[in-house]
Image (tube, one colour):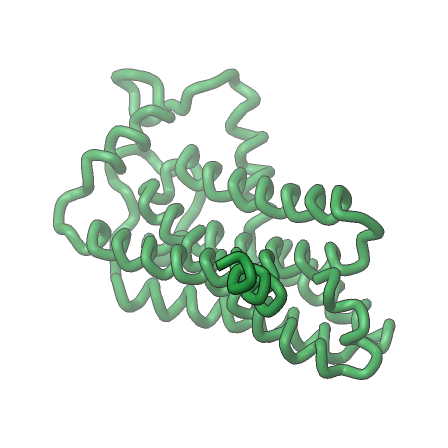
Length: 237
């Protein structure tokens, strides 16, 4: 048994196994949440969480000090189309200048593919926005899944994994990934605070975004390992 486990460890790296678990878990979580989203009436979990962010008896007023709403708007902006597009374009341009076309293609495919997937999933479920509380941000699309949550997961996890490849030690790589996860979490939470998404919309966005980002990472890792120059340091991916 020990020899078998040792052989498996030699063939399957821990981080690759974790990535596959995230893909599988994300897909499972999204399917379960999609069933909740298709119900005609909102789930009790959604209602309770959404109201927890509002002053009791006044669903138009969010909890917290007067400056909190402005801070949350700034955070949610980090998951907006303009910011994510700029970060993606800047990263792709840098990779092209650094003569890493495979990595540039990886970033483009992951983020652009995530955008297309998010739009298709919204049309597939056709869930309206919450009407339980007032919206503190302008919204014009369908609710499920949260585009901000999904695309921030795709973009920041993709860029975080790419940046981690050049970090000099494990602690630095963990730090970069943690910052990417924290940004994704805060952006999703901001959408609930602003009342523009049900909590299950955000959870589904995180599930789909993380699964897509990890799937793209696995594919890119396999492709980049075959690049003569770009594939040399892929063991640090």
